[in-house]
Image 1 (tube, rainbow, N blue to C red):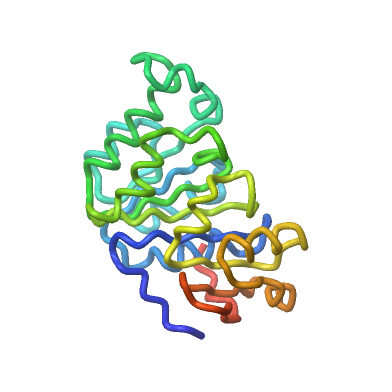
Image 2 (cartoon, rainbow, N blue to C red; image 1 turned 135 degrees about the horizontal axis):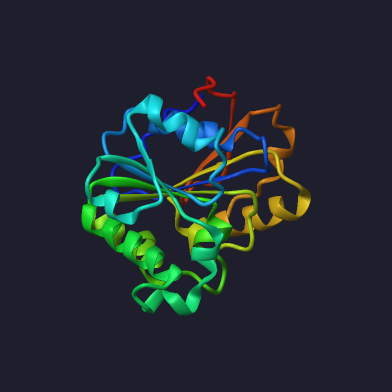
Length: 217
């Protein structure tokens, strides 16, 4: 297996369908982290919410707690994410998204996990503060990581700009999109076993096949 070195400030993306092992791989990489905010828009009680307390994370829907605890699972509803007019209106549902993203940016030196990217950094309609974290956060040692079931429907800069990309077995359409945006043909991902994944470092010509990591989530 390749040696993964996800340095502070380097963005990473994890692409795989449901039950592929994507969230487990993210959690595996998070094990040494001392500061992290996981943005959980799925809010399933058996996933991040169940994993978090065992690993020192506070689970909350209150963006204020992002500024008060080193490790946070911030649960954001789809109603909040879809209230685009409310992004600029204090007191509106959407303004909670604005406040939380601003607090993340102010933290610096932390990992921020966008899970799911199609909800939180959607193609054509991302929140400006989410884009700022993605494109400028590295200067403040903010490591933007993102998980998605799809290679499209998310801002194209995510797949193209991530220093690290982890891909699971995908359908032919998503494989084609992923290969084009990474600049490295991704057909080799079709050979992956269950929970196996492939790794691609930016500006390298090929993917590296990897065995599943231990189950931590």
